[in-house]
Length: 496
Ligand SMILES: Nc1ncnc2c1ncn2[C@@H]1O[C@H](COP(=O)(O)OP(=O)(O)OP(=O)(O)O)[C@@H](O)[C@H]1O
Ligand SMILES: [Mg+2]
Image 1 (cartoon, rainbow, N blue to C red):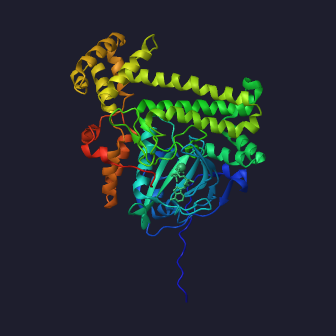
Image 2: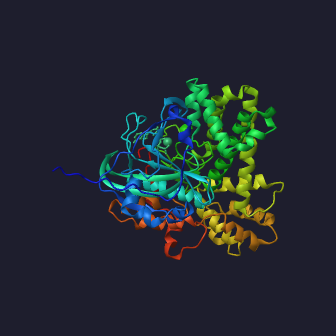
Image 3: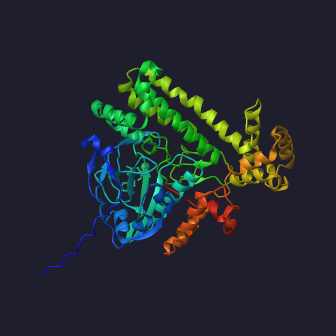
């Protein structure tokens, strides 16, 4: 008699699966199953998101759930696949890339959020892995999981993260680490790079098919537009430009550095996607570069808005065969230049507690940022302390952040004169705009160190904090404080 190991029963998520991306056909992906990992275990489960998706958290955390979200068993009804895309990396055409370690399970119908796709990141090699091992390490998976939810908690469009599982399987990076899989959730994982792929190969039928799918599913208003002489593809480019502008404005306002804004990491839905070497600013250093692999500082914090436009330009070029007229494509991209500054001003005005727009606001904002940059003031702490001051507190905790006290006093006088009459109300609004808890690098680092020792409580604690970043969490006061000195020495690279 031979030993047979019974395959784990396929998990039934209890939600209908919908063929969205998969219906595009085989030119767009390769059907394949994830590669199993040994002895999988739960690292952290996002119960809030599970509930929003209509999934039973207990089911996800039981052995069949862990097997499914590690890629060891395919859920009933899912159709796993890896998609092909191309892209510009660090400003250079990189040719074909694709999901080298991400496997899409498919889309599920949710009770309140339409169809949401589930994707496993780190689920094994695919035809697009090139030299890679198809894996993600525990460290980077925890960072992605927490940051997705931190962005969502801040109201920033993003892919979400449902669960992280880990395995003792060694994975070689700068040192030997262990494997993990993060399950991401989004209405679609289509990137600019998907369009660039088919356009660069002059596969115009596929290009149109992809654009039509994305427009009909996510931008149906483009079909009925009277803009651009009714050109739906130009209207689509304009919509994507506007969403990307809104996303970039959010990033700048909150002090988020993405780190790898390659066109293959730009979502066609304007979601923040691919959390690798990201960082939330500690000190306000406008040209801060968070990715240690980015030697030329292409993706520095203050370059992100221009890079987003550059990336949109690549998308525009890719869509040109469909739009059919270069002038129309350029006109569609123009919206970025109008929407980004408007969105940024709106966000920054909210951070300052200014409900309405007035003459001189731009100068006030410029002066604020110059003062912060000159003294490399801690960005989140400045805004939070300012919020408390406006809500009725003392100015001293804000003033203490600056070396240039006369400069600060002069700024404060201008600012106070501009504040609305109802300062208390402005202060309350500011406390809901300027987060107390930000997923700083050192907080991730501490939770990761603990997780590597098998204790995942630090991950769960941080998840709870970043999911309600504007609330007080008295037991975690220290996590709202200044970063320790060692935080400046944390080196985050593309290695993940
Ligand atoms: N360990 C790996 N194994 C296989 N392919 C990889 C690996 N790491 C990255 N890649 C691939 O290299 C390309 C660029 O990687 P990048 O770091 O932008 O993406 P990623 O972090 O893997 O994934 P995503 O963009 O889906 O979040 C992508 O095609 C990606 O799939
Ligand atoms: Mg990527």
